Image (tube, rainbow over all chains, first blue to last red; front, side, top):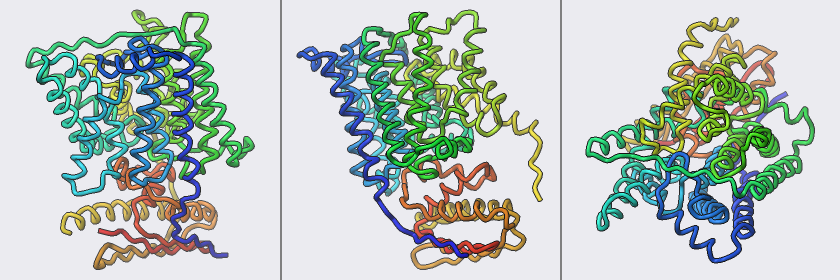
Amino acid sequence: MKTQTDNRRITAPEDWLRRIPLVLAGLLLVFALIAQPDRSLLAGFWEIQINETGLITDPMVTGGVGAGLLNAAVVLLLSTLLIRRMKLPFTGAALACLFLMAGFSLLGKNMLNIAPIVAGGWLYSRYRGDGFAKYIYLTLYGTCLAPMVSFLLVRVRPGFRWLAMAACGLVIGFLLPAIARFTTRIHQGYNLYNVGFAAGILGLGIASILKGFGVEFAAGDGWSDEGHGLLCVLVSAVLLLLLAGGIAAGCRSWDAYRRVLRHSGRAVADFVLLDGPGLAMVNMALTGAIGFAYLLALYPWGVRLNGPLVCCIFAMTGFGAFGKHPKNVLPVMSGAVLAALLLVAVPITSPGVLLATLLCTCLAPVAGQFGWGWGLAAGFIHMTIVQNTSILHGGMNLYNNGFAAGLVCILLIPIIKSISPEPEED
Amino acid sequence: MKKRMYRARRRMNRVLSELSHAMLMVGGQEIDLRLTREAAGLRLRLEGDFQPEHQEEMERMAKLLQPLVRDPALVETYGELTGEDQYTDQGEIALVGQMLDESKVVVEPGRVRMNLYLAY
């Protein structure tokens, strides 16, 4: 018996995968029109572009539920078109990146504040003499520092503000890819939000310099609870469509699905490449559903879906194609919930804790690789560390949980490796 | 060209590290690695044996080394994870498959042959 596979470059699997972000953008647009079917939609959209954003800033407070969704649709559409223009294949990495772009447009990214960062990434690719395609994920993830761009747009005196914002964005976009490549080695792939870690470090540097010049950062604050019903329908529609698409693509039994659970999730666990798009889509739906179910379970305690919380669900859903699955996210989430219950000063339903409980799942590979016990420990430590990291970058890094997770890895991974027995090999 | 050569050499070192590690993990007793510098890239020919119980694993590795699509952005984003003896599952091999420009892998019972090419 001889097995040989030719070195084919078939594009068939990606052709229909490309439609997933377009369908999501379409859904966001339709729900935006349902939520604000009048001229206030565009006015709110513009308000979101020119206002300050921050770590826990809900654009639905700034411009309305519909305007927030419209903002997400526009950012997602532009990001999708950018990736399509680069002629990149649609792998799990692309899906994770685009879902994150859509999600974080409900938590601080907008068309105006991401543009200079993307331009900075393009400049870096020119400097390196490479195509921009190679840096597109790093650049898009790098837009997590977009609040810094908005901050300068709002706070710098007229006449200089556009220049300051453009310069800041260009510097961030130019520097972040190199830092992100380096930080990957530090956490060894156990933090799925690697650029969040890199952005935290860069944000710390920039915020420290600005603080040295007397700038004071005041993190934005906004937490709506108006669109709960509509957002529940939206999230349900997204998850059900992914589930149905995955089943139609061939993942039709538990035996077919459970293959994904054998992966630790450590980067690079691109489920589209490793196990095919059908299985990846079902996993995206199930992983996102865990976050959704957790938030719905807290309904009696006053938790209502809003922009930031939908962002978390989208982040979990997107990374369901790139490292997260129910078996490795549940231990980490459990650890985070346990820590939140024990923390004296922070209620489990406070915005920061809710975000951390869902976004700490970027540490899922720790549970996948070293077992549920270590996953629980990672989630627990994450919840305590993340309470103290936003002050370092002035709340300007939207992936604050990625930053905290990088620190958790630095603390935890060497300890785990030093006390774990070495594998016995023949 | 010098800059590209430098990058290709760094990537090839990572490929070598991952593949030799993976071959030893599946019980390889003798692994031949032949690295050639060609006009426009580096070519690695690998031939080795493995324990019969790892046949399925090797066939899977062959698929991952010859992916249907290659994503240069994935390599740029996560390439630094390869070649550090962190082999945990086949994620690293999938990444190696993404790094290569051409690959041909033949798996026979207990034996594998690879012809892998990395352009400058």
